[in-house]
Each structure stands twice: as structure tokens, then as C-alpha cells.
Image 1 (tube, helix red, strand yellow):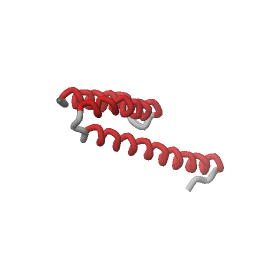
Image 2 (tube, rainbow, N blue to C red):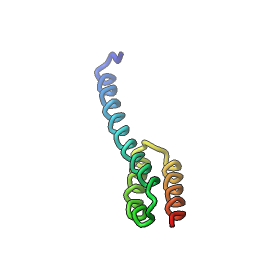
Image 3 (tube, helix red, strand yellow):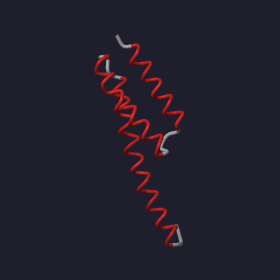
Length: 84
């Protein structure tokens, strides 16, 4: 257990940050899943910018790596382009 006040505060902060990051990561994963389950190209194209923004935000705040964000966005773009 943490012995100093600053260490105890760091534990509290890291727990808050962990829950915050977990929420945004899960929300983004659900949005990506919903986009990949879409079979309508028009609907996929409309929701893509929102999902891209969510992915970019995760990379910006450090929840995922910027290269992973790029790979996710690229994969989604490929999926959307293959829809007819």
C-alpha cells in the first residue's frame, strides 16, 4: 500500500484515469463493431467520420498507439470501399 500522501493521491488518480480510458476504449470498440456489421455502404460512409474521430481521440490521449489508430482507420476504409 502507498505510504505517502502523494502516492495515495497517485493511486486515486490512476484509478480514475483507468476507468475513464476503459469507458472511451469500450465505446470506440462498440462503434467499430457496429460499423463493421453494417452492410449498407451509405450508412457506413455516414458513420465513418464519427468513428475515425473516436479512434483519433484515443490515440491523442494515449489509450492506443498512433500506429494502431492508423491501422484501424485503414482497415475500416478498406471495408467501406468493398461494400457495394
